[in-house]
Amino acid sequence: PLGSTNTTNDAPSTSRPTTTRMLPIAIAKVYKLRYLDHPGVPPYTPPQPSVEGEENRRSVNQQYTPEQLTTIVECVFPRRGGRIDAVTNENDGEPHYIVKDRHGVIKRTLIVDRHGKVFERRETTDGGEDDDSGDGR
Image 1 (cartoon, rainbow, N blue to C red):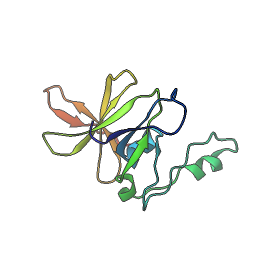
Image 2: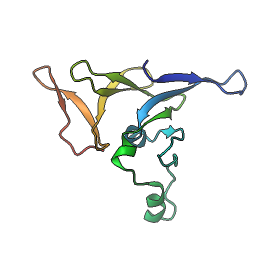
Image 3: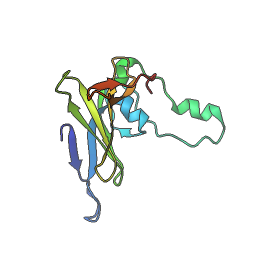
């Protein structure tokens, strides 16, 4: 699929390839995906359990600009997790992100607006598509 790679490291042959996809940081944040370093974007910081309360949580929840949230980075997926594929919508030419579970079943379609907010794309009753009217994530 568009924007996907499988890489292997020098680990024993029993290890499986690591799957990566090119996605906006906004989606990486929503799904807590690790992403590789990219110029102009804060490095990935894994979520930490809050031991000392709210202060610890705030230190990991970095603030990103809309430009950073819409920056496309290489995201690393868990070996046995789901996948997110980037596709170009035929109607509007915009990228849409198809979220699949670990069995390949499509769960939802996401879009990222110019402010870096993530929305779910839903079909309307007339067969067309409609953006979720929520506030984004």
